[in-house]
Each structure stands twice: as structure tokens, then as C-alpha cells.
Length: 74
Image (tube, rainbow, N blue to C red; front, side):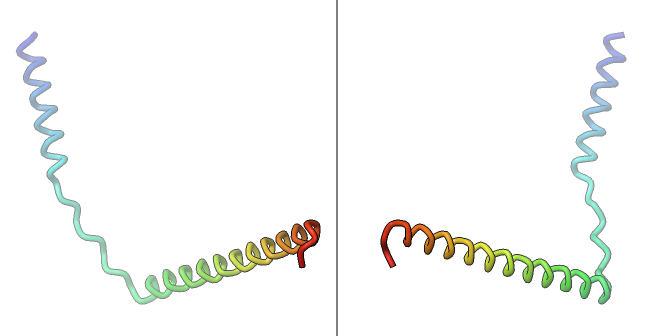
């Protein structure tokens, strides 16, 4: 019984070690349509980030002006 468990444990360890050393196949090359879709998505994300930044800047400026007026500064 102990011998059987030892063989099973050794087999499991060898299988796990073999799995860790296996190489995955390289990803398939992207088509022009996939590249264009990815570029469009990145451009849309960049535009949204720029718009969000602009809104945050406007909000910070308005907050500064409101607090500066309350403190008696121009």
C-alpha cells in the first residue's frame, strides 16, 4: 500500500513538472481588421481619458476660484 502511494505521488510530481516545462504555441498573427479594431479602441479610450481629465481640471479650477473668493483673494 505504501509502495503504491509512493508511485502515485512520484507520478503526480513528474506529471506536474512536465506540465510546467511545456511550451505554449505562439499566438496567431493578428489580421489587419483586428489591428484596426484594436487601434480604434485605443484611440477611443485615449479620447475618453482626455475628456475626463479636462472635466477634472475644470472642476478643480472652479473649486479653487470658489475657495479663493471665500478667502478674500482674487
